[in-house]
Length: 473
Image (cartoon, rainbow, N blue to C red; front, side, top):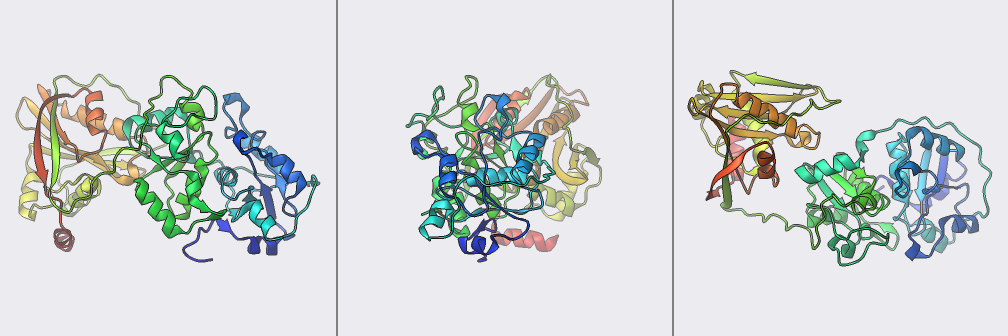
């Protein structure tokens, strides 16, 4: 297979050669919206790939949610998959009519449930027919199999988690619906749905990932992601109308080697049907302007005059540890400072000489506390006791891989607890428009109030400076 092709997409030639092979299974996952005026089950009976079984996405679902084809429990999925003759150890190729509409959804379901060898047929049933390849008709006799699920809950996003993501901006949101539905110019096909998109979402229509039923090459997909404003180095949640075509984006992300992604199962059927979920219309937020010169920042100074009243539980399923480092090595500090702050153009401490930085870190008024998650460094905060009355939160942030793990607010709260330990009259912090887009909102939610603003220019680190720093360390 070409290195520029998805490792999860297989050709019709390859599939035809596997027909009749032990442990090889074909799944017809055709599903359509009413506007398509096509019926997957009827088309399956009229002609399907030899040996294929029909996967009914409306049947194999959690009907208790009241939402269309919600992901079922692992137990129910395993029962239904077994009745279709599917084993979790099989090589399973999923297809649909046009190629990349509903098949990726079942591919995603199989992978979420633990199938290691799941693929999608390039060209779909329509392409298979055009090429005159063999078909079978009618309903096949199926020999049941044993399917043992290994559910990966991290790949599924719930409504409550999605609310937090929209509120914090900790993860990117990729919306697979058409552009008109995203902007709100077109009505939703389901009654009772508001039009528009989630704040901060990026538009990536599922139909753009394929052409004439064939999945685009990775170079083209990578460009699509960049053009839409998706940073492949950061977590992504995919969404669509009802959780079906969101999996097309998931397939694209996985094809590019992106692993920190999940699918919002309720998608717009859930979000757009509620009254208390934020919805915006119009195009996606403008992409940040890339500049190779000084960057202008609007700076906001904030303070709080009483300890925070917020109470947050320790994040579950994550081993966390906070360590106040009394004699932090310069190379480790620079590593943490750069890993946390490079996206937000932190540069002041990187430009300091060893002597200058050492003097700052050894100042008894200064303290650095490092967050560890599951044994690895995940972020840090730095406090400066400016006077007996004022403690400054000088720096606070998480490494990229820790963003989206659900520890951000809790970690900030620990920093504020530490800041108030010596009973100052005020705790201060400064943020700016080059910082995380929801930093100001988060600080205010924790109890800070703006007390002043000003404009400043930030000179990003040059490649030459970064090289010199790396050699020095």
